[in-house]
Length: 256
Ligand code: F6R
Image (cartoon, rainbow, N blue to C red; front, side, top):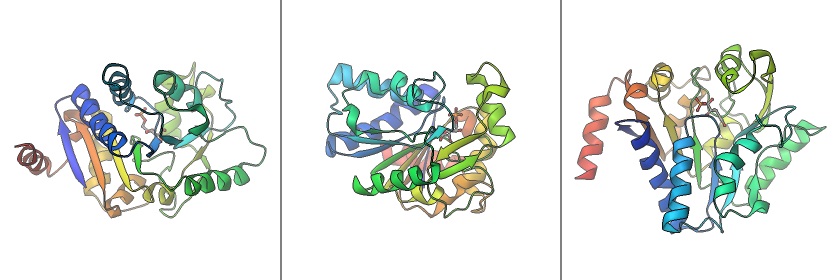
């Protein structure tokens, strides 16, 4: 795991976006996995800037999102489908027919989840998966206790996640209780994972994920077994890392 501690949210977003942009330049038909939530918004803003100002071309990419709330259709303002269009897809030249966000409104969720996994396989697998981390250590909506071998499926959100995400809704009772989420094992199959973590409410979860034991209680800790993970964290999120000076030293040595 490569841990990169950044001065602030702006630097974290720019450096993380640089990794995505490098891949898209090197492999124009890359398959990108996207996350929603507040953490990657700055990264997406920078990708939009690179597209508009520097001509970064997304016309060959295919995308797969991590998750979606059950019961929210794509036109619901709090759906992740809507979020991705508002915050990224509407502002870059990705072809609409190569955008995949799990559907939360299928009659048969289990059958849809199998199809979603098959679509990822058919696209050749995910080259780069962007991730945030929940304050309870989740990746996608793989809440504590999720199997580290889990695949895309319907999950039940924890009270903590519902409380955390209520900031996007009118009230806590409007937050859906269930979601469709890629599994931990689905994410682990991505060829590269890139996590962004900012703010002090992520410090405990990030330290547990990166330096604690690998456990289903912190599903992000499974990434310790992944051969190619970059974690971009701002100072506040990095606060509880035991080895933060060493990570800074490695990053400084590499940039010399
Ligand atoms: C969203 C997702 C979640 C978020 C996590 C952090 O697609 O998969 O795991 O990344 O809940 O959310 P924020 O960034 O809003 O703190």
